[in-house]
Image 1 (cartoon, one colour):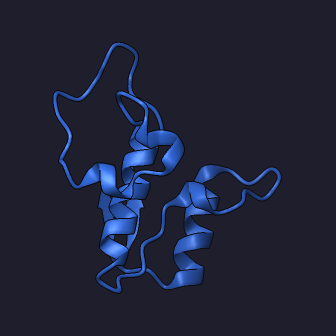
Image 2: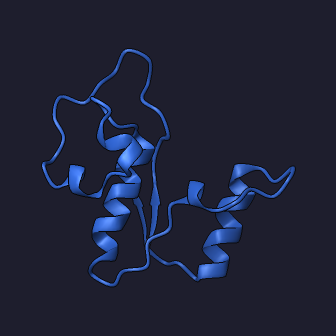
Image 3: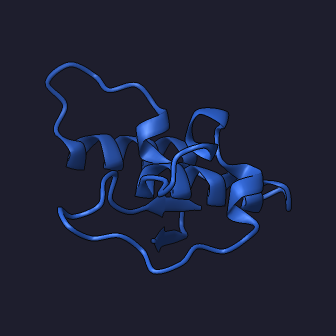
Length: 89
């Protein structure tokens, strides 16, 4: 499953609330922040879904290839993993 979404909040936006399970899966450096980034939330969601033996891809967790546009990186990762399910958070 390819888990897509923003890496940062839009300027001036903050979520009203976050699920309680989220803090169990946040990276330690994000756990102390008042409001985790969308990327930290996607990684936490991937960790939670991964406990059920799902293969979860968060694009930012894979290295970039110099000069490769994001759309090509997406196609490369989707093709390498033969992903057929895509979720946008």
